[in-house]
Length: 361
Image 1 (tube, rainbow, N blue to C red):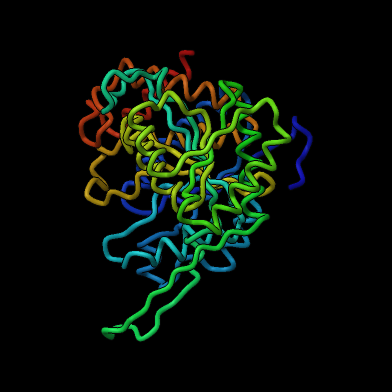
Image 2 (tube, rainbow, N blue to C red):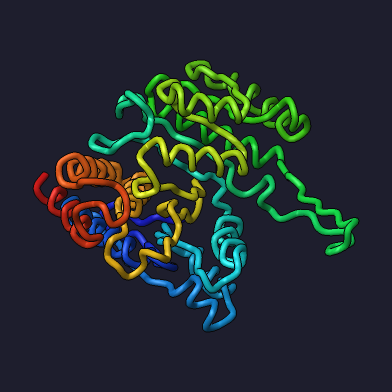
């Protein structure tokens, strides 16, 4: 993507508030983005897109080719949530969320798992020093490409086939991203490949061979391997043992939800869908939570955390740090709970608190 001179740089950001609580939490994230932008002097242009369940019910359309082509011209996409109780499962996920990931080649799903001070952890005696790692999930291959089909559907002899597709290119670029991130984090510089080599003896044989080959180019990074079931066990028992985990699409989807729970719940869990050379998308991972929509009780911290990841990927590292530090101060001193409706403040008030902390700092 062609960039202007730094002094002339104006980021183009597309906002897709989406469904349920999405519009409410996105509003607070954008409020925080505006505050830190004014403080640190970076500029951006914002455009809203009405996509999601309501749009689908009105038009029968999830994501038009025209809108998709328009989104290709942005620096980042800020997504609220996808999921509507009146739309059958899979329609919005495949037609909007997965289509954006695949068509924009957002081949990395990045999930920081970090316990903030003041957040209750369900793991006994674990502190913020124990839970601070990142999961790098391959985001455009595996079981999620939808390859397969039915034979004799609806009959007693029905056969359903779902194929896991892994390419050398897809695996290697994901693994390289994980090694680079491990080096950049500069913590214990330990990268774990999470797989199931004893069962997925074709797909994860490819993963393991690529992992070991690329490791030879990163002598400063310690590598390890664990089956996915063992990884889940150690995430609960010894989360402090992890620095960066790299894994495939399906296993990454599963272990990142476990990661969200050990960091305090969906109210704080954020992620990014990254194309390092193109348009990336950032979102809270908790979903649309329609039962809380319009009540001003949804926790916006995950959406604000998605702004942190977005700022860091855009290169505004100082602003990312400023917002994250403001999140920590609000959670540790001004919020009662991370659950929806239990925060001791409204959605809007939590956003205001983060803005106040940014301005105060």
